[in-house]
Image 1 (cartoon, rainbow, N blue to C red):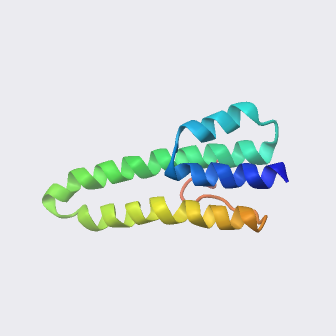
Image 2: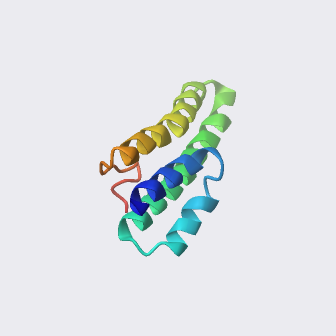
Length: 101
């Protein structure tokens, strides 16, 4: 039961503390599943913010505008999918970074 709510909190932290909460869960938790999800959540946020930054820079030449829109939508939708999967107690990996960890 702790694992379920820990995963929900980690996924939901994308909306209020995207870096702090996954780091704290990674340091505090002794469960491997929580550690894996917290590292994935942290990496996903870092990668998405880098992609949004690069796309924002490229939007000055109009190439990056569609990418900014897609990456912002992904930054919002992917944690919501993670919350739903965690509530249903299904195993789920973040896209892009899921295979890295």
